[in-house]
Each structure stands twice: as structure tokens, then as C-alpha cells.
Image 1 (cartoon, rainbow, N blue to C red):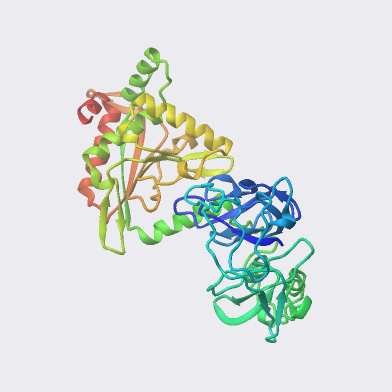
Image 2: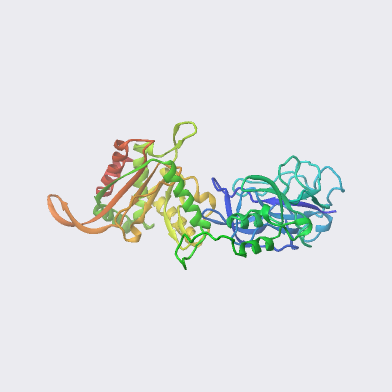
Length: 463
């Protein structure tokens, strides 16, 4: 007989705890092969296809397009074994007999698929007892789902919904309060939570009082006995915080909440920097961007002021100085703000920095950046001058300790060699975590950056 295997959302990248369903790639009842992509997920800033380590027949999908799932929540269930034999079955290997002690191995060799996706892999399935799923209804009775199984020694039973229809539900709690509630899927709980609906007050229309999605939607649509006064204008548009917008909101909110930041700024004459760039582009094969030159300046300044290439371990009350500079740079795309990371930027030449910036920028625009290319930064360079503005007060990209902001380079009156002249002027703003250093360090860093911008030859002394 077939064994139903549950595939949960894996860790898709460093520090990413949830992802949003963009598009399902399989249907319930479809046969899938080992490591076949089953869903397209959007993480904080990247879209990735998630492969399933099991081969067999898809018996259930959890969530709809646009829904957010936490890492570790179910994605799909797959029937593996004799009833799933077919082009995508896992070696056609039968599952254990009813009541057996071990699950069928998805690859038939005891090792699993071996697929790795940013920190997750599959191995041999651990032996565990097969149990029948029991769905507890509000009244206390239970519904048995024959042929289904649940992980041993866990506190929650997840739903296994075969292609023929729902046969089981999961006991859960509402908003952390005690009290089992039988619901058809995690999506039902999420809808109820978003609308402030207490599932314990509903009578489910499904078998044995099972709460279905239609029950929740009817309760939401029903007029409230005592409607609360409106808190927004009539006709106001509500836009869900999803995907990149939600990730940015959470990251910046956390930064403001946890980091005591301060900002200093200075105007600099960038005429010399532009002249140096023109000379480099005239003699070299690779076009050097202003951003690449600024990245080279930043890595040189961080070498002299290593306190700023750091993070704060609040739990241990320690400042952690980092040995490598993984330089993030802000890139505005049609999908929102992204911060690709130049890994080991301190070891790159200016030409190499220019090439990597161009590659990552193009990947950001096409949506092909990987989670690894969007995480692990230690310092961020933000060129908001592309928006035609002079200054800003950057918000630190948590958990980093500092960010350099660069405004537009514009022709302005400037005193040069004792005379008033028209020069190309840029405003540099620097936001830093006041826990890692004081104003002297921050001012010294910013002044060195400004000196290198005004006189690129100074950069040679900082190398």
C-alpha cells in the first residue's frame, strides 16, 4: 500500500523564516518525480522553485497563491509506494504493511533524494510508528482517517488530504489560547486569524463538526451585531503587505526598534572622481561605474575603521567584528527594493567590483537572484542619487552596523583653489550603530570616504 509522506517548507535562505506562494507547479492527483519542483515561492527578496524530495502522487496542497507559509509548515503530501507507481514514482517501491514500523524510502535506496536548497537536504527516513490521524472536533469526539499517519512524539497532527477529498483535520489552538478546534487546513486558521474570528465559536458543517473554509467565509460575511466605528476614510484602499514589501517593512521596523542609530553627512567635490572614472573607462575594456568606485572606496575605509564592519550580539553583550567585507548595495527594481551582496568585496579590484555589480544588478531586475546573493551582508552602500535627490538618512540594514548613503552628483558653486567655481558636488550621509562606535570613528570613516571622492589619489594611500 502507499505511504503518505508530508513535505514541509524548507529553510530557503539565511534568516528567512517564511515565504509566499507565487505559483503552484503541480495539481492534486498529479504524479511527481523525486526532486521535481512543485511550487514557486517568493522569499524576502527572491523567487525560487522548491523541489519535493519524494516521488509519487500528490494527495494535497497546503495554501493558495498569495498565501504566506512559515518554514516547517506543510507544502504538499505525496503518496509513495505501490499505489503511486508511475513515471514519477519513487522507484516503485511498496510501502510497509499496515501497522509496520518503517516508512518507504523515497529514493528506494535508504538515502532520500539528497537534494539541497540553501540549507536543507533529505536523508534516510527515520523509523517511526504509523498512527491514525485523529481530528478532535469542538465537542470532543474524534474522526479517524484510515491509512493516514502522524509523526510520533509531536504535539500537533497535520492534515493529510487525499485527492478524493478531506478526511482529517488537525487539533489546534486559536491565537495561542487553549482549546482544540477541528479545521480542514492551515489556510482556514489563517483566514480566521486575519479577520479576528474565533474558530471555537463556529459550528463546522463538515463531517463530525469539521470547520470548512466555507464556514469561515460565511461567518466573516455575516453582519456584526455591533459594528465598530470606522477607523479609516470611506473608500480607502487596503494593500496587503506581502512579499518584498512585507519583508522590507519588517526589516526596517526591527532596525529602528533595536539599533540606536545616528547620522552624519558631508558635501564632497566629486569632480576628481568623475575625471578618474573617465580616464579608467578610456583605457580599460570593462566600463567602471561610479558605484564600483564608491564600493572600492568603502572597502578601503572599512579596512582602516574595522569597528564599522561588525554586528552586535545583544544576548551576549558583544560587538562582533567581522573579518570579511560582504558589501550590499541597494538596487531598485520593478519588484521592489533589493540589496544584492558583493561577497568578499575587500579582495576585489575595482574592475572586478564593476563586473559583479553589473551581474547582480541584472539578476535583480530579472528576478533571478538567489537567496544566498541577498543575505549575509556586513555593510550597505545606498546610492539614492539615482532618484534625483541630494540627501537622506538611511536606515541600517539589520543586523549590520552602518550604511553609507550617496546623493546625486550635480553641478553646484564650490570654492576650488581659493576661487568660486562650478564643480560636481555630492552629499554623503552615514548612519551608524552608536553601540559599536562613537562619533569620532564615524566621522573619521566619512571624512576618509569624502577625501577619496575629492582626491582619488588618496585612495592609493588607503589600500
